[in-house]
Amino acid sequence: MKTYECVIIGAGVAGMTAAIYLKRAGISVLLLEKGVPGGQINKTSIIENYPGFKKIDGPTLAMNMLDQVQSLDIPYQYGNVLSIEVDGDYKIIKTDMETIMTSRIILASGRKPRELGLSNEKKLLGSGISYCAYCDGMLYKNQDVVVIGGGNSALEEALYLADICKTVYIVHRRLEYRADDILVKKLEKYDNIKPCLGQNVIEILEKDNRVSGVRLSDNSILPVTGVFIYIGQIPETSFIEDLITLKDGYVMTNEHLETNIPGIYACGDVIKKELYQISTAIGEGALAGTNVVKSLK
Image 1 (cartoon, one colour):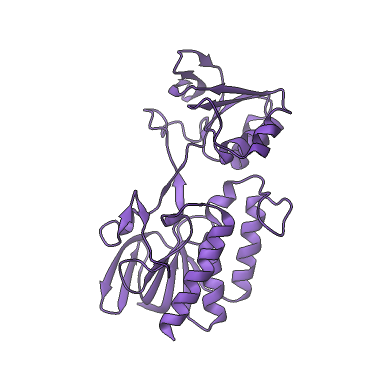
Image 2 (cartoon, rainbow, N blue to C red):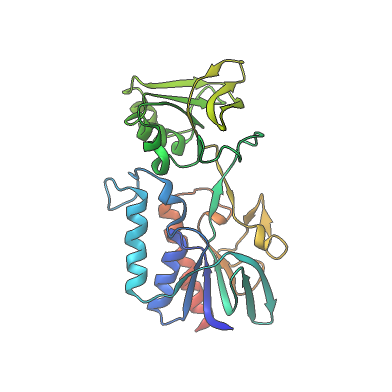
């Protein structure tokens, strides 16, 4: 069984930051990730509010951070965590590949996109439904698409798609967007962005097992081939819900980012907090890593 002083579950920006701080302090640390390094920022086309970069795309920022992690020889490996057991001062992490022992854990598992909950949503994923405009936008070049949501992520991806697609509808259940003014003003510069405010998508239409349109709550139909969903995020905490204190699915921590279980810390988008941004996640990663170092030394 492999043993480390600290295991970080999740290699998003928070997890990678914590790993850098731990490694520089001489702590043996392992990064576990079940997806792509960088987490959700890989699905972000343009980042304009991270200090030091006037503009950068999410995958580039993620790779820059991963390069720094690898330059420090921090062990990084795939691992879908199934459960965590506490045995005194030690924690036993069971993944779908192996079992790992550690004295400290940092939970940095982040969030995943919230689904609409419509009957054929899962079936049509990859056949017209996407949660990542940056990943799949070029598949709908010169076609009509719809973005569902009214927050910053929805508007940012609608702006990205507007340079690729023929028409971009934005469906939002409120009469006003819940996004920064600078993004709302940018929308006005595009003639091919069509807002549909005060509406919900109640049905996804399909033909030959592909999206052919959406039906709105006023019973009107948008004849689109692509549906991009941005209606929020839910925390990745299913593997710890019987161990860690949660609120609305998010991990609760104290001022040191420690959970109700001594030796288990959390940072980034998986914790309950007021602001979910790259800059806050990085700060929390640094704080969690530093507090783990203090607890070990």
